[in-house]
Length: 371
Image 1 (cartoon, rainbow, N blue to C red):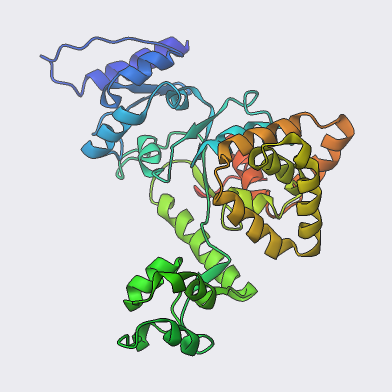
Image 2: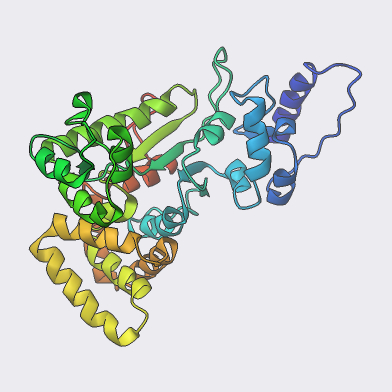
């Protein structure tokens, strides 16, 4: 049986250890608490009749990586060892929303044995390395790992060029001589542009300088930057011999992308619930935002997202509201929304991640496209 297979695999592993080493084995199927408390170097991961030792001689992890995992692989993340598929996400928003989105498209994560792991940032490498074997090994742990990333490409950039140079020079100190090599270059924030050009200006002129230097990217510029970042992130994880697929948001962040998707109206409702404390004012605010988005989708989506990000509203709370909004739709409404989501370019990266982790993907290289 499967137990005999594991026994043989473990015996082979034991042959690599010194004969005088004293070893105690605990064989467990689903003890998250035990897994979280044991040094990752001491684990042997059993999957599909094969035993995969997790020691430094077998994985791509370095000493500092093990130290990181031993600190952060708590009981909420150790479910990754007991899943048939994994979705690694940046934060709580994706963690809360993706299970309900999977339900909507008819691919419940629990039914497919998929676990979501919130890495709490962008440090995905350590989790991928854990499932990557040494470079000279032909082994590949056959667990599909979907990595969900924000592109973080803003639809605008801060720059000084021929369009605004004279206006900028009037706002900064007369002693400043603009660096010609930096003219026309893009910077993500005013602070980074100011630092690059060593600008000296009165604080009272900050808002005006922000308006003058901030320029919307053209469709061509935005498309180029987005594609470049997407390819860069996919390449970043392709060097590991793990079964991965990287899904990158098609615009800026999760929330911004969804404001341009069929989930927009439900997300607006969720945002308003989070931002507006008085329930009596929520309906009016929702209608006001929806009208603005209908008139100018791109401009208003950007404005709404920025005001939301700058408020005290919680993104995770908003994601929870959105998940609830989806779950409470009637059967007919769910059917219509499902069809729209499955055919929408802004939702595609999330749908692809769910499909890949669930095993519904086309065979190919490690970054295969979902069916």
